[in-house]
Length: 183
Image (cartoon, rainbow, N blue to C red; front, side, top):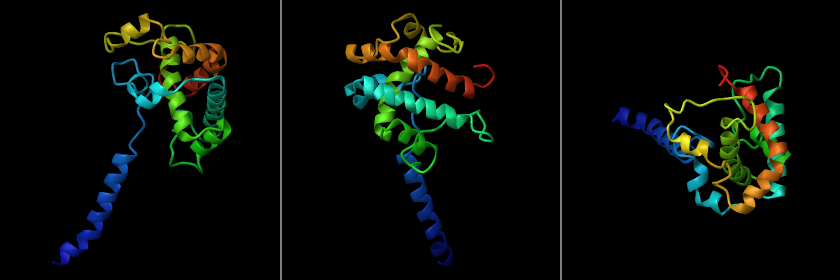
């Protein structure tokens, strides 16, 4: 009996931890070309969203702040800024404040923009130069051969085309800063 009461608080804490992890697990990786599920095309919230000049300008401010954070002395550049709704006092908060966006607004724009920029990058239209092994990721071949903007509504595609010359260098800087082994 004594052991049972002793383990109860530990088991309770473990259950809380497991529940919290299940509810706030890692954000899906947008822009993947390796055949893994991408959040942009199938996410109903993302499908209903429209890219605008205003939210793309805000996203550009978010990317610029992320690059600034990554370049900070002593931080290390091997990882990017993980935007989280639970980090309002940390790097996420800095990025969202600079952008003037909520976490949800940021994530929605990111999930629409990142796959397009990733595709444009692998197609060689924007830098830094990267490549993909299509034998290891055959699902990406069709995407690479198609229109990078095809997953967007016509309004969103037009807005992103207007802003791609501003966003691509910011996005590319983050890719370069966080690239490992030249990939």
